[in-house]
Amino acid sequence: MAAPPGALLAGGVAFFPGLFLLARAALRRLPGLRWPEPDAVIVAARLVSSVQAIMASTAGYIISSSCHHVIDDQHWLAGAYPEFAVPYFVYDVYAMFLCHWHRGRVKGHEAGPPPSLRAAAAAYLRKDLLMVLHHAAMVLVCFPVAALWRQGKGDFFLGCLLMAELSTPFVCLGKVLILYKRQHTALHKLNGLAMLVTFFGCRVLLFPYLYWAYGRHAGLPLLRVPAALPAAYNAAAAALLAPQLYWFGLICRGAWRLFRPPAPP
Image (cartoon, rainbow, N blue to C red; front, side, top):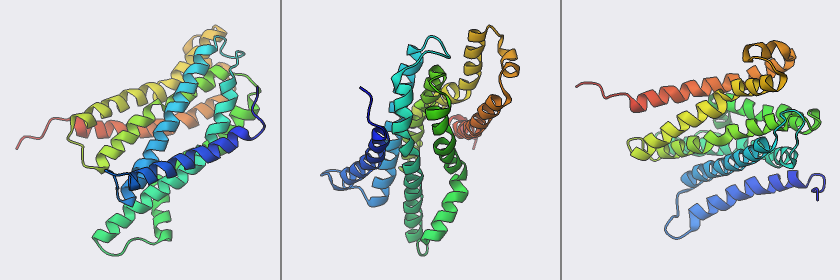
């Protein structure tokens, strides 16, 4: 039985902010925890991002593994999950600002007054503009394409794109470990390796794989696939791939600092 129109969207609006508020309250109030507000906000935001990533990756695997014909096969999750998840990207922009705001207030107490709200917002946009633009594109471009423009075609490709979120829990855990000065631990190194592998496989190699999958369907070698597709498709793939390459470069730089041998005294 199909959900009523707007029910999944309303569910996402309630679920992601509600989970954040619940996690923050638990970290602040449960006996044995009672974390300070900045820590509770940051860890709760990372927890919600990880939950969304696990849900998206699971939905993507179910969709892509169920669609043997890459163009015409359909799965109900391909229509349901994007509608449920689109409020997450709106919520996450605000959650990322809250994390930035609390980090700034903590630093402000260490040296001078904490930053004003306007100054914090400007600094947040300077620091995370690419991520904010990415989230805006997910809401304003990718969701309408997934929900309306596809007209039930290409569920396989949508499922593969959802599995790109598989690296997000490792990214979130890495940021939490850095927050608590745990860069020297074996857990941080193992997590960094897992983040590097999953990000490269699920976000960078994803696009050549999608081209290869379409080429296998159309009977074309990989190198001839871009010329066989409309220019808009290639432009969209390039626009999605570009920030992934930038972030992967940052991850590689961090991995090099983490795993390089210590300098001789």
